[in-house]
Amino acid sequence: MSTTPTPTPISRPVEHSRTVERLVRGQPTSDGDGVKLTRVLTQPLQKRLDPFLMLDAFGSDAASDYIGGFPSHPHRGFETVTIMLEGRMRHQDSVGNVGLLEPGSVQWMTAGRGIIHSEMPEQEEGRMAGFQLWVNLAAKDKMTAPAYRDVPPSGVPQVTLASGVTVRVIAGSTLGVEGAVSRPTTEPLVLDITLPAGTSFDAALPAGHNAFAYAYGGGVVDIAGTRVDGERMAILANDPTADGVRFAVDGDAATPGRVLLVAGAPLNEPIAQYGPFVMNTVEQIREAVEDFQRGKLAA
Image (cartoon, rainbow, N blue to C red; front, side, top):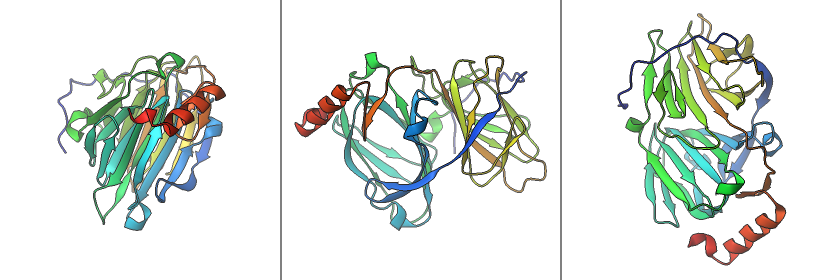
């Protein structure tokens, strides 16, 4: 897989790492037309992990688990980030966008005042795996015009350190490298990190950002002395004295550690959610439902 050229990474050790406040096991569920997935960041965690609303992890070799896809459905008031690891999905929306999600690609969609879209598999066999992250929009931005961006695998900067650690910089910046996406207000940082056995990686984090790390791929990762097994989310403690977080993988590990690190600036605003609509008040939710029923979200 090709990657965009990146400058020499500027690596600075973390002097005081955030610790793990809590480990979370995702909840098996289904969405769309029966697609099986694991809901890792659930609604009760939204205030704690503000501005992030949801994280779904999906991965299966069985076509029956994903073949139904996600037929046309609406969104209003937030952004969706789809990170493909394996497989192919086709995106279409009411604004006229069409895009192909392939292994290593990222889709960043701003629903804003409203959009109707579908995400359907472009394969009938083989493995489909990835993540979908929901990022809230500030009250002032919830009714902005919808927007859509496809980032191909070559558009996601990848840094490989001398230790063998690789970091895909999806959003924000790290090691002096600007990511594929930069967003105002919530300032999200999204890193896909792979750590071979016996390596470590320090990621700088703003003290005021909420952050979590999701270990996946079957490997075990150590975060500041806490063992995080695969398919677990570690909520990182908010510590004003911490300047980042330290990941490490044991030298005897048979499987590399893989981590999705997510951090962002909290909005500290009320959250009202009804399915695919996320606003600030119940009245705004009613308006969203009525607009959808009247066909206004497809305009």
